[in-house]
Image (cartoon, rainbow, N blue to C red; front, side):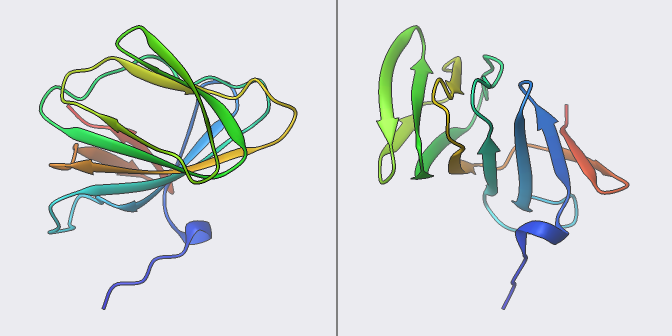
Length: 123
């Protein structure tokens, strides 16, 4: 059994107020996906990006925001799931006054570089 706690895994601060916690997908993990939990501060936006060979799912667990996928935009809120196909440029923004929290699952996993409690997407 593998249990990891949000406060004890590597963090990635991005998007002027979005903090991503890498729960699954550490360099030595042998699992078929990456899992992160992200806290998006009010007014923050994740940079537009794509995963060339991976499908990604966002599950909003608290708050609301605006999802962008290949130029299409939609409002999302707690309980909503967004499926992002491989190579689709996407981002989530939080235009509200409250924290937006979501979980992302990516399969196959994207590479991650981990150093001193932080992580960055790998090549």
